[in-house]
Length: 481
Image 1 (tube, helix red, strand yellow):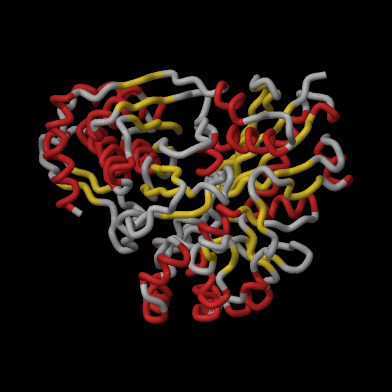
Image 2 (tube, one colour; image 1 turned 90 degrees about the vertical axis):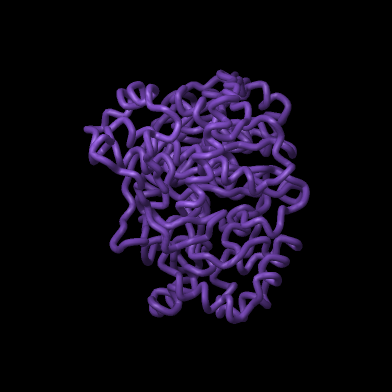
């Protein structure tokens, strides 16, 4: 009898899942969408009940394609949930989660900087102070929502909240703990009580059980099993923050591979055996073997999101046509430079106040010039991010995510970075990475076999002449900031 694994990814705007056999055949995929709330400029909140409803809907749909006894494991990851979901002792949701793109905790950054030096914070946590990080969002909640903070028994990452609901077991993946930052010691892989005390954060409000992505986080209760059509006591694996499993989904099980995942946001990541400290990067334990590997990344808060915004507001959502028409636009977009900082920016700029900008408009500017400039901005942000890795970047990068569906974008990224760009349509999705990690944890899959599932669909070489041209336009982009 064939055996299957589910991978579920709780994303920013939708939850996606897939059902895959232990031999690598994707049998079925499912998706459930929802919205985030932005009640004020720079704020971004999400409802955990939306996440739970979406996950259970996706599991139900996927489970229709098999007999319950054929399913051996579920891997579940989530967007970076920032503050986490505030819940009471019974796991009832008390309020929204302040997610990764929320930038409200600016005053708390100054407070942290007055209490702890940047050098100490970097040495202990591998990260700095910025509203992106969850520990600063917790400080904001304590100051601005004291009743909510006091009533909260736990602040749980999205995947941890859903897993606790389905299994009754509470856990936090090492990657999610590391991405909380300021109260996690990246050296010991435990909470950092001395820093937590300085910041006034109660560590008892955080999960106390750390798990890696290949250790069982919990077993599905009989009640949920019956409701979802899956076996009781089915193991669920907490695979942490989505970009980690997404990188696993490109076949990365060791060091040296740069992966740029470009969807709503952009994350350019490098897996290393030692953290790349003092480079303005975000650093936490990797999704696979977190006691051995570190995940170092930079990125853009709004990458694919700015193209989606532009086409929705000004181009009747016709991105595909503009993608074709804009191929005739020369490097530099006929004088247009776009700064893609529509929600401030995290690594490597760490600037909450910067905003999106369009420079160089004239009466000759066309819609396709603007569209091309938005695409160039994404490519520039990729180059700026991978430059933070220094000499550890080789001659190739792997690009995955929705942007990789555009052949033009792959060529643009190759020309701007000067790197060979590889893309895969069979990998790079977080739900696939979570399924792979769950399969490894359940003992039905090994990493070398999983690697063979990932096929490179396209290899794009940089155009030397255009790469030289882009040196000028990239400098112009950096200078404009």
